[in-house]
Image (cartoon, rainbow over the protein chains, first blue to last red):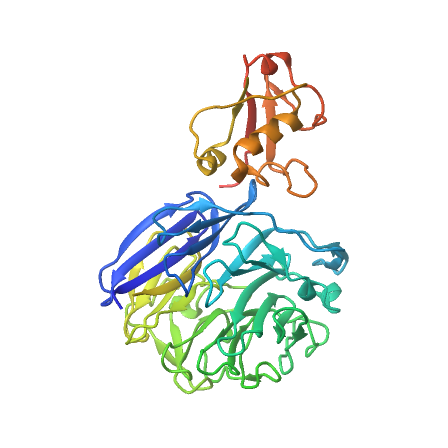
Length: 371
Length: 98
């Protein structure tokens, strides 16, 4: 590998950080699309120079940008996201019905094989797909029109489809997560979906173990263990070993099990990372100490990782799409904060260094290993 | 020739600087000016008007000749000075936020 490229989405533009394989010295470009909210920038596994960015604004709506040269130049592509057929209602915050209304794209997930095929997760929750490099987008309507859809309700950040995992083995299988509906799986490329939330308990909803209604913040998978998923729920860190058939809690000795991000080491499928956040009423780290917690045992037993991270007066948040791992050896871990810092570790989390310190609030972080 | 001033973010998106000029056939209305603008700069589709219902986005305003035309019918003729190219049609991002 010749190096890595970190793709950073922020409240006021996108930034791209690059380094060689030592990951010591970083060059940062940007802001790209300055002043716009960039919810996500992601690259194609099939062609690392093909990037997609979700650019949004309360004034001017949704734009999707595409780059064919690793982010040096960009072109706007299609931005029409139309819900198919009867739009229907979901529940609003106050429990009254409200029609689905497109607001923005939270997450872009390019296919493993084809740079022109990308899946997009929307607010209000729905899944879209392009097969022509972003020129046109079509909804996979079976998800939004699932029989439980009228019971879905927004979380504080909106009713967003924020996580898309394309199964690396079974190409017809996908996992997605919605705040606050929960996790769903398709085994037939999106023709049908089933909620996979058994084992989740959420005290914030009337029926704690309801089939849907859970505020899942993030799910992560290691490609060598496609049946195993890890979840950071609103509260609780969870895992499943049967592709979502049942979940169990693995919060163990974490100082708090509230948080947003979760990710898996690139080469150790039982090594996972979270950033504990004090609570849903105080969206900052406990005791003003920014600590990544690592479990090498697939959960339950966690160790704090602090070297190079601020251990006093730190009151930032780390949002759900803001952690990524690279595939180099040793594995690199990256995360961004609402205070505009992007931290990286080139040794699996043992030590950390700020790649950038004063960016706008970070909404998303992805990393690509460059050939 | 119709002169149109875009807000800064849409100038960047359309990769233009200064005013945009458009040729509009027939009666010059908001709708036809925006149709011509989007035909010339397709990347602006959906950023000023909703893709699906064609309505002005909530935080976008239309001004001309010191008047707010945002709530006028999109099919009302624009002021003569705009039609004559002596005054621009202003597309403005509403003042809000930080």
